[in-house]
Image (cartoon, rainbow, N blue to C red):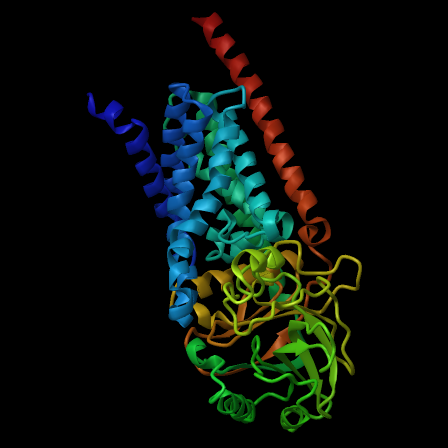
Length: 531
């Protein structure tokens, strides 16, 4: 009988929270052990309620949440450290920070979400609803503050289920995060004797079932959607990251791309897509290599490639962009998109002038090749194309992970989204799989097909319902030929209103929590009078 109080003292309790956090990470790609996140949240809620019963301080409750976050983000983001092994001699000292430092910072968001819950004046299932709203609020903040990093939001644990995935068109990934938190916590109430709280908990699972049913009906619409008469080819060269920028091999890598692209196809290919930084040359000034590309572009066709772009030689200061270039069959660069959401320390050093003054101009370098920081582009664009090609929205690498930030709100709706990326940094870890599933969500949220072409995989084409129309596996070399799916006829609700829907969900769940508290008091008084 004395074991439970001992077990729930501060440090053992924090250790349990850390274990629950790691358990919850098993629900993300590629494992998709969905019950793990429900059990993790259920166990977490048990610990949190005990903390409130003891009237623990704000500080203790913060650390309980922080340890949950540490376990959760360490298990879910371990793959970040793999990128540092590409140049181990230069970045070995950053590995501890990547393994534990980044999770430690991200865990502050979970710690604060726990701490703020202490302000909520009601108990029971009302507090559970408030916690769900606070959790999603801090997921949103994590995705926006300090350039944002909305990786592994809880809603992504549903990526394995196409029916539930359809609801992202209504409320986005944040809506599914809200439902997931409520379901996990509800497990604690379905076995309670309190009829009112048990019924509320069961109603949460009923809502999930109804959402699944709606998704199944909505998915039937995909059967009547047609493909655009545009055949596209995705080229996946699978160049090892340790060799990608080797000066002695860059011409061989380029020729390999040409050879793959030249393979015959059973489809009338009109568009060819290469991955992020596929071309190791500045194509604006490299006419020879640009014309070699033009020789492979079908008549009146286009080739889309990731490549670095720079200011005209002689221009001071020199600026470099991580770009997506579009080249026609004459070798002309007809348009381009510049990556706007750059990776801190990966593509630029934050506070560069301050860092240089403190540590010297050569002491700190970004992880990607070269000493010059990339210049950000202007943000999401809907880019028109010549001939009969539909306009597209370009996204470079992890720009695709930001909900409601992939399409320009002021321009015409694009017909497709192109995401060029290079996940070769992360090897055969869970990172590329998680990245892939986030792109699937963007297709559903926007109702627009998404074409993802990656250096080492996973390249894939998703229709506007998130269905995989073809893919090339991780670590594979080859080409994928498919017809481009069509967008939905109308923009889904989340595509129209985005974060306003998230705000409405959060405010609504707080209001519902308050109403449940009032209802609980009424039920309690009724039982008191009857007894």
